[in-house]
Image 1 (cartoon, rainbow, N blue to C red):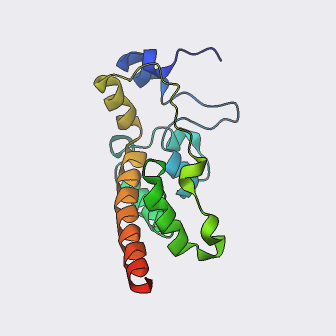
Image 2 (spheres, rainbow, N blue to C red):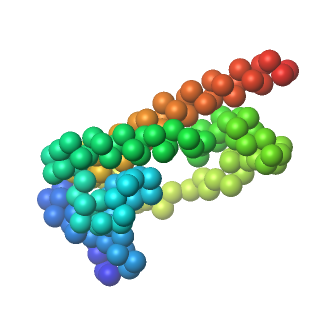
Image 3 (cartoon, rainbow, N blue to C red):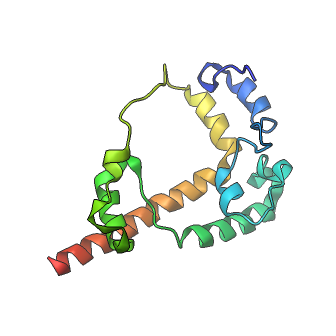
Length: 156
């Protein structure tokens, strides 16, 4: 494939391409959380176009399935690596004191420029499931962080 980078595509080009694009293994480019945690058995025609508009009640049922599965995960964020280290040490103590999310994070970006707000809106529209799951994940991260901090305070 010799595609233009997303940052150089117009919103109209992204809108056309995103529901159709797939990698060399046949996986689509949208709704990765549905692909990983959802109940649709890799039906890319559904996953890659999954949205409240296209799938109505099924979208919301699938979101519920995914949220239930994600709620059992330990959430870490590379942009908040120190706090992620606390969460890891609390929820996965068998990993020992060598847990270091920060040490594994690369501090460089290869992005030449940011995408436009209009392009971002198109991408988020095609990834409504991911957007909602990531919002839930942010809340879960904060809740897990509070538990981890409380545990450290009572042990210390």
